[in-house]
Image 1 (cartoon, rainbow, N blue to C red):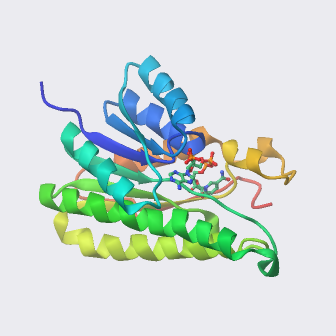
Image 2: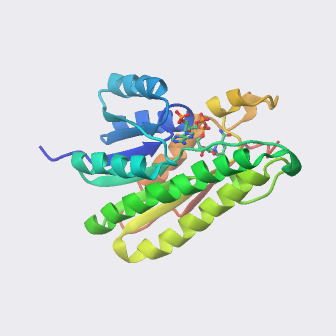
Length: 236
Ligand SMILES: NC(=O)c1ccc[n+]([C@@H]2O[C@H](COP(=O)([O-])OP(=O)(O)OC[C@H]3O[C@@H](n4cnc5c(N)ncnc54)[C@H](OP(=O)(O)O)[C@@H]3O)[C@@H](O)[C@H]2O)c1
């Protein structure tokens, strides 16, 4: 039997990454589930397993170079790396003068340097195969500024720059690059903050998964390069 295509999903332990992992596994990908929390990854793995899908549990801190290298070595042993979902992300939202260096650095480390480390490993594999698709879960904060979001926006604007450059570098290698820019998404993300935005008005995790799936299933030599996905009522 031919091996299934492999999808690496970072930030697979909850939220959008968990939902993406379940969808991709149910569509026939071997999913490689990467994030730091082994306990939460185990829950994702159980949900993936319940759909009959295949997975590898791969606890990984995307900011640690050796851990990311090990992640892609393990992924490569499972089959051809068809998809990389660069999804792991963190945010601290405060006035710029209140952000500590540690908070600033963490956003850049996870959202940008982690994305770079994963991209570097995936590109090496995908270029060899002349095939693959890298999908960056960015944010509308990667396209327009919002008060209290200086560090988050800086990391996500940077992520757009990384994605746009990688896309150009990979055009001749038949590797597709998509950036997704969601507005507020009703995921576990919002459990970590005190904001009282109406969660029932937000884009749903399922909406994000459906948008990403439409990009994954673009046939042939066309690519959806960017997706903006916001709530009908506009931003908060
Ligand atoms: N929710 C929104 O409103 C929204 C809107 C626009 C864009 N986004 C973006 O969507 C992506 C997913 O967010 P979400 O809504 O699903 O939020 P979430 O529920 O908070 O999930 C964030 C994920 O990132 C992982 N992560 C954080 N630091 C990591 C690290 N150092 N190494 C590996 N994994 C790490 C977390 O896992 P561990 O803690 O287990 O490591 C978790 O799985 C993020 O990039 C976020 O910026 C979200």
